[in-house]
Length: 84
Image 1 (cartoon, rainbow, N blue to C red):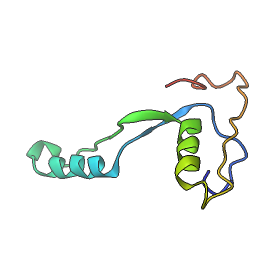
Image 2 (image 1 turned 30 degrees about the horizontal axis):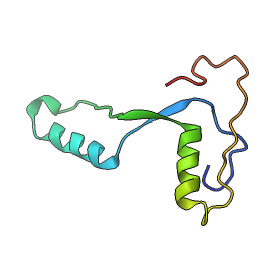
Image 3 (image 1 turned 60 degrees about the vertical axis):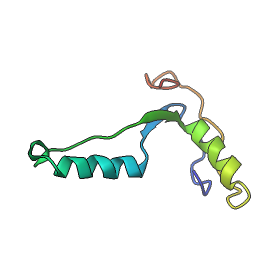
Image 4 (image 1 turned 45 degrees about the vertical axis):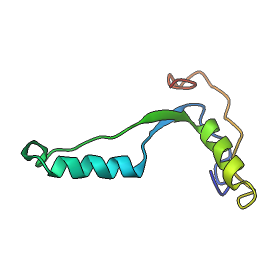
Protein backbone atom coordinates (compact mmCIF):
# COMPACT_ATOMS: atom_id res chain seq x y z
CA UNK A 1 0.00 0.00 0.00
CA UNK A 2 2.70 2.49 0.97
CA UNK A 3 4.88 1.80 -2.07
CA UNK A 4 2.03 1.52 -4.58
CA UNK A 5 2.45 -2.24 -5.00
CA UNK A 6 -1.26 -2.88 -4.56
CA UNK A 7 -3.18 -1.97 -7.72
CA UNK A 8 -6.45 -1.60 -5.78
CA UNK A 9 -7.54 -1.60 -2.16
CA UNK A 10 -9.96 -4.17 -0.77
CA UNK A 11 -13.29 -2.52 0.05
CA UNK A 12 -13.47 -4.10 3.49
CA UNK A 13 -11.75 -3.47 6.78
CA UNK A 14 -9.10 -5.02 8.95
CA UNK A 15 -8.93 -5.12 12.76
CA UNK A 16 -6.01 -3.21 14.22
CA UNK A 17 -4.54 -2.75 17.66
CA UNK A 18 -1.83 -0.52 19.08
CA UNK A 19 1.33 -2.54 19.66
CA UNK A 20 1.59 -1.05 23.17
CA UNK A 21 -1.83 -2.53 24.03
CA UNK A 22 -0.72 -5.91 22.68
CA UNK A 23 2.44 -5.79 24.79
CA UNK A 24 0.39 -4.90 27.87
CA UNK A 25 -1.97 -7.83 27.24
CA UNK A 26 0.99 -10.21 27.06
CA UNK A 27 2.54 -8.72 30.18
CA UNK A 28 -0.71 -9.10 32.12
CA UNK A 29 -1.13 -12.68 30.88
CA UNK A 30 2.27 -13.82 32.17
CA UNK A 31 1.57 -12.36 35.61
CA UNK A 32 -1.28 -14.76 36.38
CA UNK A 33 -1.27 -18.56 36.49
CA UNK A 34 -4.41 -18.70 34.33
CA UNK A 35 -2.44 -17.19 31.44
CA UNK A 36 0.08 -20.03 31.24
CA UNK A 37 0.01 -21.85 27.92
CA UNK A 38 -2.91 -19.77 26.61
CA UNK A 39 -3.21 -17.74 23.44
CA UNK A 40 -4.61 -14.24 23.40
CA UNK A 41 -6.07 -12.32 20.50
CA UNK A 42 -6.05 -8.53 20.51
CA UNK A 43 -8.08 -6.32 18.18
CA UNK A 44 -9.15 -2.81 19.03
CA UNK A 45 -11.21 -1.61 16.11
CA UNK A 46 -11.79 -2.18 12.44
CA UNK A 47 -10.55 0.31 9.87
CA UNK A 48 -11.38 0.35 6.19
CA UNK A 49 -8.39 0.02 3.89
CA UNK A 50 -9.45 3.27 2.16
CA UNK A 51 -9.44 5.15 5.48
CA UNK A 52 -6.03 3.70 6.30
CA UNK A 53 -4.75 4.72 2.88
CA UNK A 54 -6.14 8.25 3.29
CA UNK A 55 -4.38 8.51 6.66
CA UNK A 56 -1.07 7.44 5.10
CA UNK A 57 -1.49 9.95 2.26
CA UNK A 58 -2.19 12.77 4.73
CA UNK A 59 0.72 11.85 6.98
CA UNK A 60 3.34 10.51 4.57
CA UNK A 61 2.20 11.59 1.09
CA UNK A 62 5.19 13.85 0.57
CA UNK A 63 7.60 10.95 1.18
CA UNK A 64 5.55 8.14 -0.38
CA UNK A 65 3.99 9.44 -3.57
CA UNK A 66 2.68 6.07 -4.83
CA UNK A 67 0.35 5.16 -1.97
CA UNK A 68 -2.55 3.10 -3.30
CA UNK A 69 -5.87 4.93 -2.92
CA UNK A 70 -8.16 3.29 -5.47
CA UNK A 71 -10.72 0.84 -4.06
CA UNK A 72 -11.44 -2.26 -6.14
CA UNK A 73 -15.05 -2.51 -7.31
CA UNK A 74 -17.42 -4.82 -5.47
CA UNK A 75 -17.81 -7.98 -7.55
CA UNK A 76 -20.63 -9.20 -5.28
CA UNK A 77 -18.72 -12.31 -4.24
CA UNK A 78 -17.27 -11.09 -0.96
CA UNK A 79 -19.79 -10.93 1.91
CA UNK A 80 -17.42 -8.69 3.89
CA UNK A 81 -17.06 -5.96 1.27
CA UNK A 82 -17.98 -2.61 2.82
CA UNK A 83 -18.66 -4.11 6.25
CA UNK A 84 -17.08 -3.25 9.60
